[in-house]
Length: 168
View (cartoon, rainbow, N blue to C red):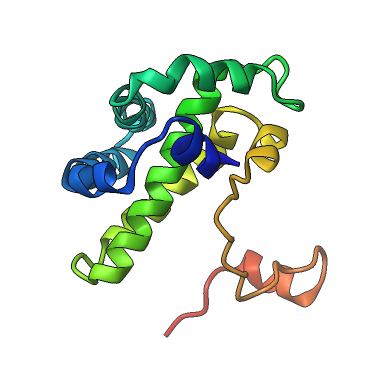
């Protein structure tokens, strides 16, 4: 559904995205770097939302109609349509540029930066909550499986953990 909002309702063309690709990548990369800084999450979020808003506002002819459609969507009652649309556009941009970077194979650590950015938004349910995320098709990153189970309370592993790490 997020993809339909961006491509079908807002009518953001692939040609426009390709033309804007370097600017989109630069903004997403800088935002991901902000997530690495202490207390900079708000700046990273702001940078991402600004990038998405810029894309939305690049084609304003369809904005009002798209916002009206979001307002009328079952399951999004009480959600700010501007936020829903901006988050949809941001999620689309992240997915679109991740696929583009994968095809280009030019920036090895860029995928890691996008993962960090997505993790930051996952932590705050993309500003719209889990129900709206599900409705729009916004998925959280898959968490890596843990390699070891935590020690059980009172068992031998627990006692060993209290004794400190083994010496080499």
